[in-house]
Image 1 (cartoon, one colour):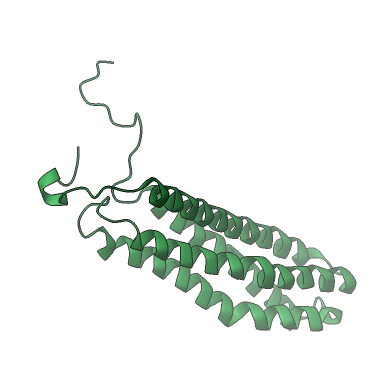
Image 2 (cartoon, rainbow, N blue to C red; image 1 turned 60 degrees about the horizontal axis):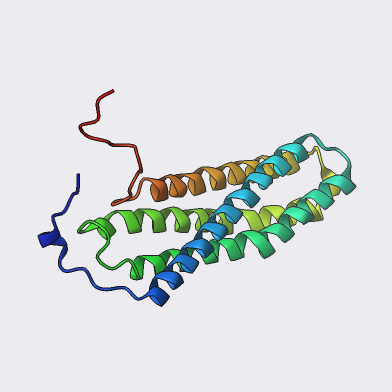
Length: 186
């Protein structure tokens, strides 16, 4: 069952094969960046939880240094890629979505990405720098507090990115093959 009738949606614009191909490539880039971002943040959860029990200053310093490098060279570019490709996909959606879908869905997805980035930028760089520079004080209350804040930020990342992924799966106008069949006897 459709939310809009063909009269409400307006005439369909013919799409060129090159435009459709470019949109598929853009969608592939968006998915790759999003899954990469989710994957690296999941690795952050595992790494930060593992580092809670580590007491060797060299191992702790190395673990948080790797975390810091992954944030700079993998997580940030993936977040930027997700935001840019998501906005480009929104701008190229045309009339294939129900009316006014962009009034709630696009701001909701954008708010999740922005909230994730804002929290991360406000906590992670300082905490990671402290964790690397003061690894010799592992086990102290200040160091343990920093470790717990890094675990919480990593979990927050995974939850927010997963929520954005769920919004993408259950987006307005999405078609689920075989999910709704009317008139089929069981």
